[in-house]
Length: 396
Image (tube, rainbow, N blue to C red; front, side, top):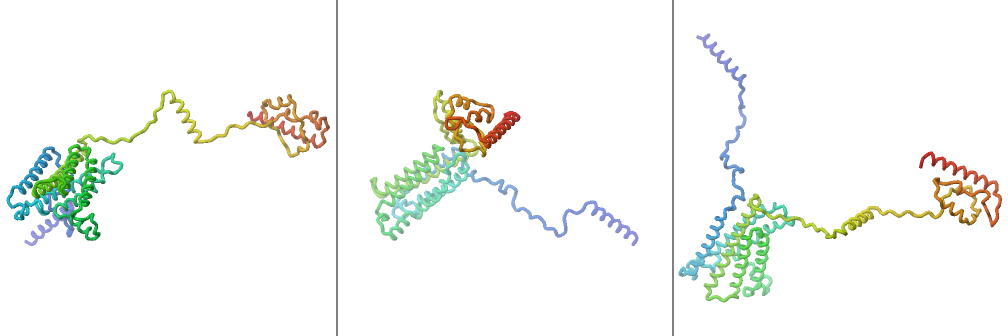
């Protein structure tokens, strides 16, 4: 029995050894295991919707949103006008004269939603190729303005700032009864509306909506200042709140439409008019074109290098030596001698240009040359002959 058990144990050990050598284990003892994913592959970033996917691209969606906004404004104003005890404080939610009313909240939400719309337009608009002046930065400047208008709807930020400035400075400009503060705010909003209308000119519907929103805000300021007479405070409050709320919702709808326009243009689904650099060409007649080209070429050559003209020679070229005596004065040449001197010669210096012994005159009569003068003249002639031989050898 013991022998059989020993043989079976040996066989089992050999099998285990062969398996371990043939297929080594892929996992190590004590190796850290990879973390198990807690989410599916659909939860990864590449499978999540992008920011531009939030913009509705179908036109009927925008039409439905505008109709819903108009229905909301009508419902809020009708509830204030026709619900009993809506103006005496029993229904603060429907009282349009309060900062915490439903109309103020809707306007604040609309202006707050305009902030991410402006940032989305900026993120796409800054990649436009022909915007050389960086006008897309205006959408970043519109973000704090939208936030301020949103706070103005619910927290009365403008009135709080005005009272603080009036308490510090004491100027009548910031008094509650003075219209200057309201006019200043109206001027700033008009400037912003004009800038937005200029930026959204690529989408005509959005441009019309921005302009109409600016006109509604200005009309609200006119009603607030009492420049339009309305029957009763309730009608004036309902008109002012309705104008502000409509302007806020209309501004949000316009920015959403322009965001749709920008996204479609970036995807290549809308034709965009690109600005081309203007090249001004001077108009010239056909007859004067060659003359203009020639004069232009001359000007370019003159601008590159200025070359002096050749200077005329003042006299014949002669060879001089240090041995010649300067005391000898030459007699004025005759007509024949001048013609012979002015005639061109192929050599640098010739024997004809050298004075002879017989032609040398002094004080009207011939005289004999001294020994030193004859030696100098002989040496000068030898040098002239050598120069002539060198000229022929070089072939100049």
